Image (cartoon, rainbow, N blue to C red; front, side, top):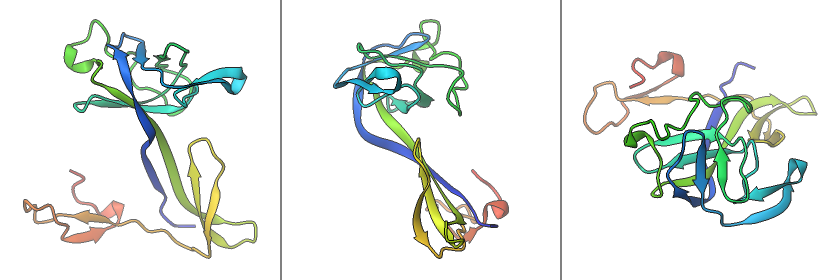
Length: 178
Protein backbone atom coordinates (compact mmCIF):
# COMPACT_ATOMS: atom_id res chain seq x y z
CA UNK A 1 0.00 0.00 0.00
CA UNK A 2 3.04 2.29 0.10
CA UNK A 3 2.56 3.48 3.66
CA UNK A 4 4.80 3.44 6.70
CA UNK A 5 4.62 0.97 9.57
CA UNK A 6 4.99 2.10 13.17
CA UNK A 7 6.32 -0.23 15.89
CA UNK A 8 6.09 0.94 19.49
CA UNK A 9 7.45 -0.94 22.49
CA UNK A 10 7.27 -0.23 26.17
CA UNK A 11 6.70 -1.52 29.68
CA UNK A 12 3.29 -2.83 30.73
CA UNK A 13 1.91 -3.44 34.22
CA UNK A 14 3.69 -3.37 37.54
CA UNK A 15 7.40 -3.86 38.04
CA UNK A 16 8.75 -6.48 40.44
CA UNK A 17 12.12 -6.77 42.10
CA UNK A 18 15.16 -8.96 41.76
CA UNK A 19 15.94 -10.94 44.94
CA UNK A 20 19.57 -11.91 44.22
CA UNK A 21 22.43 -11.11 41.86
CA UNK A 22 22.01 -12.88 38.53
CA UNK A 23 24.06 -15.87 37.45
CA UNK A 24 25.25 -16.66 33.91
CA UNK A 25 21.88 -18.14 32.88
CA UNK A 26 19.28 -17.01 35.45
CA UNK A 27 17.66 -13.95 36.97
CA UNK A 28 16.07 -14.37 40.40
CA UNK A 29 12.77 -12.48 40.61
CA UNK A 30 10.73 -11.62 43.69
CA UNK A 31 7.50 -13.63 43.48
CA UNK A 32 4.41 -11.49 44.06
CA UNK A 33 1.72 -13.68 42.52
CA UNK A 34 1.17 -17.24 41.35
CA UNK A 35 -1.73 -18.27 39.12
CA UNK A 36 -1.93 -22.06 39.10
CA UNK A 37 -1.86 -23.70 35.65
CA UNK A 38 -2.63 -20.38 33.87
CA UNK A 39 0.01 -20.72 31.11
CA UNK A 40 -0.10 -23.14 28.18
CA UNK A 41 0.83 -26.68 29.18
CA UNK A 42 -0.83 -26.04 32.58
CA UNK A 43 2.29 -24.27 33.84
CA UNK A 44 1.91 -21.74 36.67
CA UNK A 45 1.91 -18.04 35.72
CA UNK A 46 4.34 -16.18 38.01
CA UNK A 47 3.95 -12.37 38.37
CA UNK A 48 1.68 -12.49 35.26
CA UNK A 49 4.60 -14.02 33.29
CA UNK A 50 4.57 -17.15 31.13
CA UNK A 51 7.31 -18.63 28.98
CA UNK A 52 7.75 -16.60 25.79
CA UNK A 53 6.74 -13.27 27.37
CA UNK A 54 9.18 -10.39 27.00
CA UNK A 55 10.66 -8.66 30.03
CA UNK A 56 12.66 -5.48 30.56
CA UNK A 57 15.38 -5.84 33.22
CA UNK A 58 16.91 -2.59 34.44
CA UNK A 59 18.96 -1.15 37.28
CA UNK A 60 18.80 2.48 36.03
CA UNK A 61 22.32 2.20 34.54
CA UNK A 62 21.70 -0.54 32.01
CA UNK A 63 18.79 -2.56 30.69
CA UNK A 64 18.05 -5.70 28.68
CA UNK A 65 14.89 -6.75 26.90
CA UNK A 66 14.57 -10.51 26.52
CA UNK A 67 12.09 -13.35 25.97
CA UNK A 68 11.52 -15.58 28.98
CA UNK A 69 12.60 -19.18 28.46
CA UNK A 70 10.90 -20.30 31.66
CA UNK A 71 9.95 -18.98 35.09
CA UNK A 72 9.41 -21.30 38.04
CA UNK A 73 7.46 -20.87 41.28
CA UNK A 74 10.57 -19.60 43.10
CA UNK A 75 11.00 -16.81 40.50
CA UNK A 76 14.00 -18.26 38.64
CA UNK A 77 13.87 -16.93 35.07
CA UNK A 78 15.88 -18.53 32.26
CA UNK A 79 17.36 -16.55 29.40
CA UNK A 80 17.38 -18.62 26.19
CA UNK A 81 19.56 -17.83 23.19
CA UNK A 82 17.10 -19.60 20.91
CA UNK A 83 13.35 -19.90 20.92
CA UNK A 84 11.00 -16.92 20.58
CA UNK A 85 11.93 -14.48 17.81
CA UNK A 86 13.48 -12.05 18.15
CA UNK A 87 15.66 -13.93 20.59
CA UNK A 88 18.60 -12.91 22.75
CA UNK A 89 21.84 -11.76 21.18
CA UNK A 90 23.94 -12.63 24.23
CA UNK A 91 24.29 -16.22 25.44
CA UNK A 92 24.62 -15.23 29.11
CA UNK A 93 23.56 -12.47 31.47
CA UNK A 94 27.15 -11.56 32.26
CA UNK A 95 27.20 -13.73 35.39
CA UNK A 96 29.97 -14.51 37.86
CA UNK A 97 32.78 -14.12 35.32
CA UNK A 98 31.55 -10.72 34.09
CA UNK A 99 32.53 -7.33 35.50
CA UNK A 100 30.18 -5.99 38.20
CA UNK A 101 29.03 -3.26 35.80
CA UNK A 102 27.41 -5.94 33.57
CA UNK A 103 25.53 -7.77 36.34
CA UNK A 104 22.05 -7.15 37.74
CA UNK A 105 21.60 -7.11 41.53
CA UNK A 106 18.80 -6.49 44.06
CA UNK A 107 18.52 -2.83 43.02
CA UNK A 108 17.15 -4.06 39.66
CA UNK A 109 13.55 -4.40 38.53
CA UNK A 110 11.71 -6.50 35.97
CA UNK A 111 8.59 -5.47 34.06
CA UNK A 112 6.67 -6.95 31.14
CA UNK A 113 7.61 -5.45 27.78
CA UNK A 114 5.08 -5.37 24.98
CA UNK A 115 5.33 -4.37 21.33
CA UNK A 116 2.56 -3.00 19.11
CA UNK A 117 2.64 -2.64 15.33
CA UNK A 118 0.44 -0.14 13.49
CA UNK A 119 -0.12 -0.53 9.74
CA UNK A 120 -2.57 0.03 6.93
CA UNK A 121 -4.29 -3.04 5.45
CA UNK A 122 -7.52 -3.87 3.67
CA UNK A 123 -10.37 -4.77 6.00
CA UNK A 124 -12.94 -7.53 5.21
CA UNK A 125 -15.00 -4.98 3.20
CA UNK A 126 -11.99 -4.26 0.97
CA UNK A 127 -11.45 -0.76 2.41
CA UNK A 128 -8.08 0.45 3.68
CA UNK A 129 -8.00 0.63 7.47
CA UNK A 130 -5.59 1.29 10.33
CA UNK A 131 -4.72 -1.91 12.22
CA UNK A 132 -2.90 -2.57 15.49
CA UNK A 133 -1.21 -5.88 16.31
CA UNK A 134 0.05 -6.24 19.88
CA UNK A 135 2.38 -8.93 21.23
CA UNK A 136 0.70 -12.31 21.13
CA UNK A 137 -2.67 -11.00 19.88
CA UNK A 138 -4.48 -10.90 16.56
CA UNK A 139 -4.52 -7.71 14.49
CA UNK A 140 -7.39 -5.40 15.43
CA UNK A 141 -8.95 -2.84 13.10
CA UNK A 142 -8.85 0.59 14.74
CA UNK A 143 -10.30 2.87 12.04
CA UNK A 144 -11.77 2.21 8.60
CA UNK A 145 -11.08 4.55 5.69
CA UNK A 146 -7.45 5.28 6.65
CA UNK A 147 -5.48 5.05 3.41
CA UNK A 148 -2.01 6.12 4.54
CA UNK A 149 0.37 6.34 7.47
CA UNK A 150 3.40 8.58 7.07
CA UNK A 151 6.02 9.02 9.80
CA UNK A 152 8.21 12.14 9.91
CA UNK A 153 11.32 12.58 12.04
CA UNK A 154 12.35 15.89 13.59
CA UNK A 155 15.91 16.91 12.68
CA UNK A 156 18.00 19.44 14.53
CA UNK A 157 19.94 20.47 11.41
CA UNK A 158 21.79 23.39 13.02
CA UNK A 159 22.82 21.19 16.01
CA UNK A 160 21.90 23.86 18.55
CA UNK A 161 21.88 22.90 22.22
CA UNK A 162 18.08 23.00 22.52
CA UNK A 163 17.67 19.98 20.25
CA UNK A 164 14.61 21.61 18.71
CA UNK A 165 13.78 20.20 15.28
CA UNK A 166 14.38 22.58 12.38
CA UNK A 167 12.61 20.33 9.88
CA UNK A 168 10.61 17.12 9.67
CA UNK A 169 11.69 14.50 7.12
CA UNK A 170 10.95 10.93 6.03
CA UNK A 171 13.27 8.17 7.29
CA UNK A 172 15.21 7.95 4.03
CA UNK A 173 15.96 11.69 4.23
CA UNK A 174 17.41 11.74 7.77
CA UNK A 175 20.95 13.09 7.43
CA UNK A 176 22.31 11.93 10.81
CA UNK A 177 20.48 9.44 13.06
CA UNK A 178 22.64 10.52 16.03
